[in-house]
Length: 203
Ligand SMILES: [Mg+2]
Ligand SMILES: [Zn+2]
Image 1: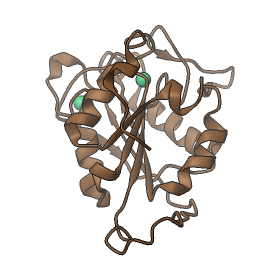
Image 2: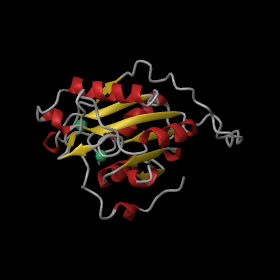
Image 3: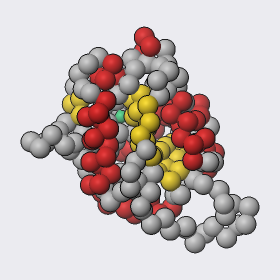
Image 4: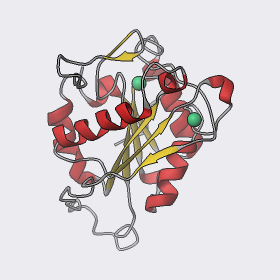
């Protein structure tokens, strides 16, 4: 996939983004069965120098994988997130082209006491199950801007942390998100490709 021009997000930025903020407590989950996905290497990987490169698909959460309203994750009667359109089909089709797949999500409502960190993690795990375990791992930033953390997008902390933990080649990796801060975080981290969520999922 090609790197997309930054202006692809013009006019849409800030609409659905989750307003998070904050800094140094980069939380991590160690997804239980998150690596159970059968990773099929793309047949195009016949270049020996590329064969052992680990490319990752980094995906934003709110407004990208699941619906948000007033900066909150929309949940159904059972308390589970409501998926954005085409998420199931698109991830199923694209996931085999990457050696790893991560959720990277600002969750400032944790800092504000509006939602617990445990509940956010539960939602990530629920989504992972719902989508057939596509996610290798995930990171969330529980801070607000005032915390001055290194993980809240547009800071690159979550990407850098995941890349180090999983041996990811960021330049060959992709980030999908719905907000300009997603794009900026990806560029700052050195992620080679950014794709606006609406384009990735065909909204
Ligand atoms: Mg978002
Ligand atoms: Zn943070």
